[in-house]
Amino acid sequence: MLKNRIFRLLSVFCSIVILMSCLTFSTVVADEPVGKMAAVYAYVLNNYLYTYSSMHTENAGDSLSISEDNIPNGVVYSDIVNFDANENPYLVIFLADSGYTIASCHVWKYDEETENAERIAILDVNYNQIPLGQSGVFSLGSNAEKRYITYKVFEGDELVHADYYTVIDGDAFEYVNAPQVLSETGVMDFSSEYFHPNVDVSHYNQNIGNFFDKLKNSAADSVTYEDIAERLSDEDEHQIEEVLKNVVSYTDFDIANYTTMDEYQNALNVEPNGDRFYLISEAYNLGDEIYYVRFSTDRSYYNYALLRRSDMADNGYQILKVRTDCIPLSDRELKQIKADYDRNTLLYKKSKGTLKLSKTSKYDDSDGLSEPTKAPAVHIEKSLKSSTRLPAVCLGGGIAIALLTVLWVYLYSDNN
Image 1 (cartoon, rainbow, N blue to C red):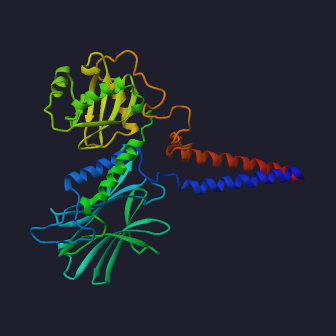
Image 2 (spheres, rainbow, N blue to C red):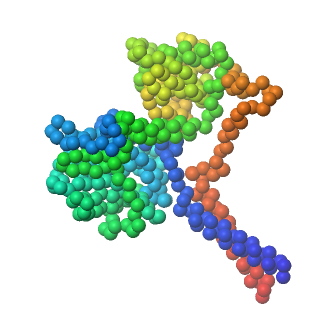
Image 3 (tube, rainbow, N blue to C red):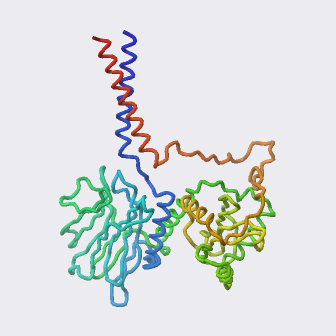
């Protein structure tokens, strides 16, 4: 009967939905750090760079000789590694520590509940204790199933022994047997006589700088507020710029650190540091006339200020928070800061009304008669964010199983 064929086709369709749900179940993870995760990883890397600096050589492929006066030190390489398909990506940092004459690899995990990073593994080798004639190599490896960190010891070209490490469900493990069909990329090799980065660390380790910027940009790109920088009137833009010309001398200022108005006012009195304001890159209205403004100076691209538009403030804006040469705020951080400021008693009364914005960018040269030379950017929200993908998959699979059960019961009873 035609009706039974239709029901059987529906059954096959449900089976396909269930199969797709099972395949998707293990891939509902972030491929790259975004938002708060990217910001947290950026803070971790920033602390390493502040503590150890970055290792660099004059030319790519150069080795460093080891002596009492020349002990290798600094971050060699950092990357995001998806060790576990069912977990968020991990931050991996390779470095040399001159204080302890060790080469090491550190692995960090992002905890979504605490919104902090946790170091889950340290793999280190004292290269001064490596026997003469032998050398050690740290590498990143992978096969079709997993990602690994490997450490191998060679005597000449002959492999002496090898260790393999990976991360499963947030815990680091050492493999007893070598993984099969492993593709490896060396990160650094060393002995008691030399240290050699296998990655390019020339140009003051530009690779680390690029990776650091990538994390910072991922945090900044998570902001969901509308960027109004190009829709500000000339008068409003000039007024904000005059405020920013004065705040460039603050390296780390926050009104939340003060309990009285006198303390707050005294903290605003700082000596100029020589930095010069360059331009506004983005501006966001957080509500209640609080604006998050990112700007660049002659020294740094990554700077921001939070300002309260108020008639009580000099130049029309109260300075709430300023960070220069910093990591941009993520969307989640902005929302938390806004909630904290709503309870802060030191904020001036907001101005009436709000900024007058043009409907389009004032830098749009289109006269409205001809076709624009460049298509306007279209921001399309993901239909399923990473936080909702897994529940959606489970719901779809559950509905399909229930429908499949009903269809087969109906067909069985109809045949009888």
